[in-house]
Image: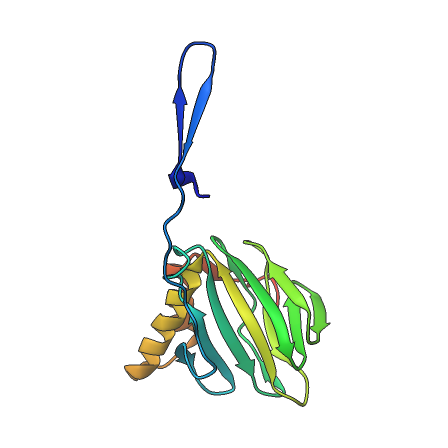
Length: 178
């Protein structure tokens, strides 16, 4: 049930409320196979978008991140308008939150609320695969913008990436080093 399907009506001055509920209509589902999705980044850190929000009413975006062994991730940063989740599928990922580091193996879930400084890396000898969620799906477009910059031959300098991050209410956590 969604808020759009509820209608509350005041009947009289005694605060009596009638509730009208409409059944949601059947909608299409999304099935993304192992070679499907939208490839965003290539190289030592690869990003494949599995759900861009179009099936979820933009409440949720999902990506798959594959990090090569002994690879650093992005500088620590903070999101202002979305939660970010990471589920470790395989390998080991190191999550740094402020000055605290956490090594996370398969089956571990890391949830990052808005405002928390964070980054990730792969300190291990095997690739790390993470299922990455964005709630809402705001940050999917960030990865599209980076992909488009690369395709246009624009260098991904620190300043350029910070400019793209700012479009999605994300800022570097300059008070911490990665």
